[in-house]
Length: 113
Length: 116
Image (cartoon, rainbow over all chains, first blue to last red; front, side, top):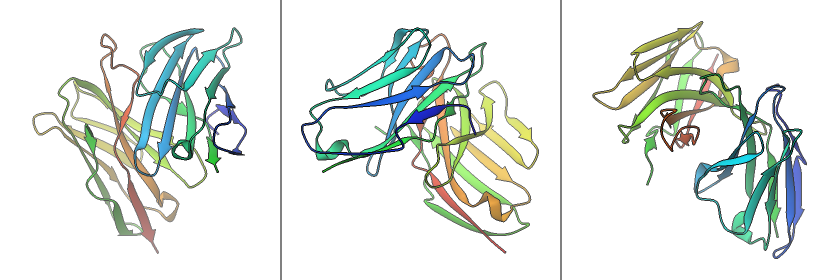
């Protein structure tokens, strides 16, 4: 158990809909990262937040957005969903203090039908 | 643009023998390298890492070797155990002073199967 929690574990929705994925980082970790794992693209970095502020963006679609709240949990919002958005979405947190490793949650499997 | 490559999609090894997983990268600005292990239906689990200023890091049965001139790293698992059967990902990050810090770039993964 990495200490990072993600809900829900599974999500099935239709094209055009909007969903919210939730993540709680490990206790004390200020950084949260979101990754997408799809069959054809592998694990891809989406976005990073540090103590409530956006720090870095990867190849995140404009239909996707995220935020980190004062209690440090984060939400990833996916809108106007397409079939190609079906993937595993992972959240990770980092302990800071010069450490590079990120600890991953169990992921949310999103299926768009 | 795949900057981190794991060219072997699978590896089969007997229990007790050595598993060697390889990873190549193209970006000379990468400063830190990590290995993750992933079981089905779980998130990646951090195993071991190495900074670009070192050429070897060891933690129990796991050793990572880095050859910067060849832009190549490897993970050795000795001895291999049935519980090591999983997908192993290599990842890389830029230095903390760069824009690419924290944006882990992952390889495609290598499926390891340890047979009794």
